[in-house]
Length: 193
Image (cartoon, rainbow, N blue to C red; front, side, top):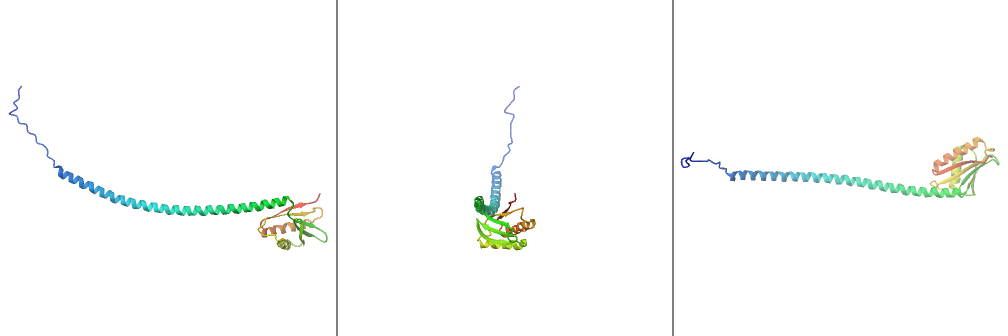
């Protein structure tokens, strides 16, 4: 079969696209997107800057509080160190027998003899616990024992001779003295055999 090419006309209708108008629309849309993104990035940057500033302020407040807490801890540590040194000194003196002694005797009635490191600093007749506490505190002040000093003392009595009520009065008086002398520690020694 032979086809006559001459008689047959082949026509093709092509689609003609105008690219210039389409490119204009695409470029306009691209510029619009870029402008929107630039505006949004400014807003995001401003929001981010505000958050950073707020966090920096919070960080500054936290740092200031932490600095105050550290300073407070150092003050407490220094205070504890000075108290530990005072306690150690008092224990060393106690070990050496250098302490305040309160000795209950019945020479002419019940009398409490007070010594500081083997030196007589006073004597007090037993009365009520309140009066006895005041008199013991006066004797300690006269002996120049300061109220913030660590005071280790021993209450010495002979359980065969001493009356229970007298021992109780002295113990109660020493509890009251320890209110004024907060670092006053007193032990009881019964010399009865």
